[in-house]
Image (cartoon, rainbow, N blue to C red):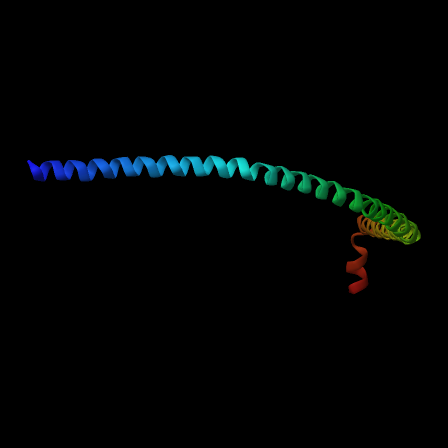
Length: 128
């Protein structure tokens, strides 16, 4: 019996010790939460202020960048417009000339076909 009571006392006291350690850890965690709360609030406030300052600082630069881009696009349009108009004019001229050449070729083909139809034996006579 002495041996079994020894083990019961040993493991029983270990269980009590473990419970005490858990209770102390829980207390330490709660104290840490309470102690850290003001620092967390300060960090949150600091972060909010930093973000606000960054937005305030960046806003004028963003506005300047937007204005610069708008000016650059407007200047590019101004510079490109004469070239675009000239290219359009050239394309129109080429289309007109191409149409004219095609029509001339059609006329020549039609007139030579009609001559052949009118005098089909003329080539045979000329070649003899």
